[in-house]
Each structure stands twice: as C-alpha cells, then as structure tokens.
Amino acid sequence: MTGNPRAFRVLVRNALFRRVELAALRRYDLLGELDGPPPGGSGVAGSTFDAERWQAALAGYYAEHDRIGTGPDARGPAMLLLTQDGPVWTARQIFDDPAGDHDWGISAEIDLAASDEAGVAAVRITAVDRL
Image 1 (cartoon, one colour):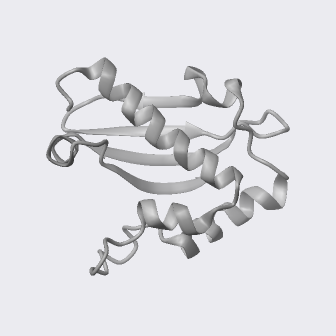
Image 2 (tube, helix red, strand yellow):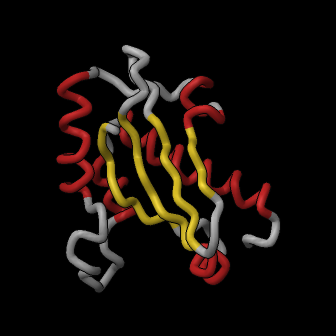
C-alpha cells in the first residue's frame, strides 16, 4: 500500500478531503462513523472523533463562516500540508472558508504500517481547529 508514495499520497488526500465534504454537509454522523471508536470497542478516551466531537469541533468554525468550500480550490494541493517523515505522516487539511482566511482545518496522523495492514490510508484525526 505505502510502497508507492505518490499513489499513497493520493489516497491520503482523498481520505482527508472526504472528511471536508462531510463537514461541509454537516454530516457529523458519517464523520463519526469514519473516525469514531471501532464497532464493539470504546477506543482510547479522547483519541477518536465521534459524531459529537466532530460537531463540537466544527461549532467554532460555523460560528464564523456559513459554509466550507468543496470546489477545485478546496481540493487543490495548497490546501493539504503533508509531512512524510518516518512511519507516521502528519497532515493538515485546510478548509476553504468564504473569507479566504484558510486558518481552520483538520489535523491528522497517517500510520504507514497500519495502512499497509488495512489496505487503506489509516487516518487518525488529532484536531479540527483554527491554527
């Protein structure tokens, strides 16, 4: 899975942008399914983003802006900061806000070994906030 870094970057970009699309639709339920505790398990306290945590995290954004852009600019390479260093990459997916501030986004870690094992980009959301 991670042996082709270019192809894996595309998977990471798609996984993070999917979360942007769901955040734009305010589909906290589906975000929680992606990032909440695994079925049948509670996960580690504070380490998962369930629907309620997504909604709380995005409340500050939506207090300032009425929407999250999902057009071509929102998906562009300038909106994803990806540090490809070591066995865990870090990412910051920036929201395309109407004011053009670009100061809100999603921070995540991508575990390469877990990605290889799962066959998909193993994304763990660490924050949804303003920088």
